[in-house]
Length: 195
Image (cartoon, rainbow, N blue to C red; front, top):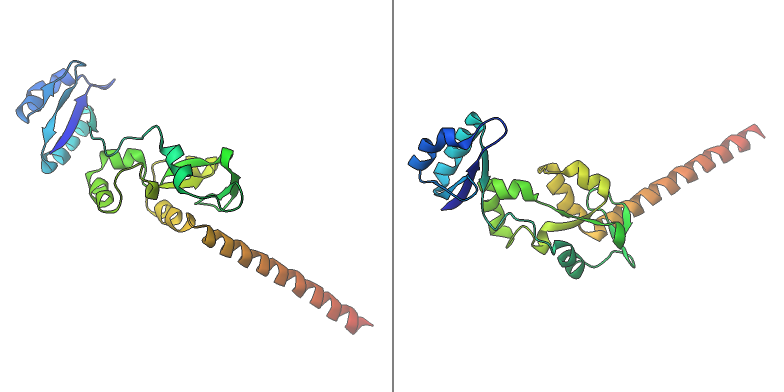
């Protein structure tokens, strides 16, 4: 059973749909919204109904709520890469601890409202604020990601490991050193041929 809440929006008042909501088992609460427990298959139908009627729809569960202590959980369970610095899981920038924004790999908004994502996550982590769902991010990447999933989750899963960025930066350095060496060697060959 899934607990849901249906309320008014600026476009539509919920009382216009009271008969339908009562028929499927929702009851009015003190705030004027309708709440109740529904089976999973009913939730999708109600969600579509609310979109059609322009009503607010929300799944009420503890699984998808952002905790107040997730930032402290992250710093307690994840060690910095160098001294007091963390890598951004998405772009690899080195960030001091005071500039790290802790990001939920699976976004809170998506996990709280999508039953398929909840089912998937329940197999892997204990909750949305689980240390395995938290990554270090720079402010720009955190804002760009927002509630997106897909490639952002793949990037975050790989980028949460410091060795990945260390290897990538070492490769970049070696590539840059190789280019500089090649330029110097070509310059030497040109001057040797002209003299």
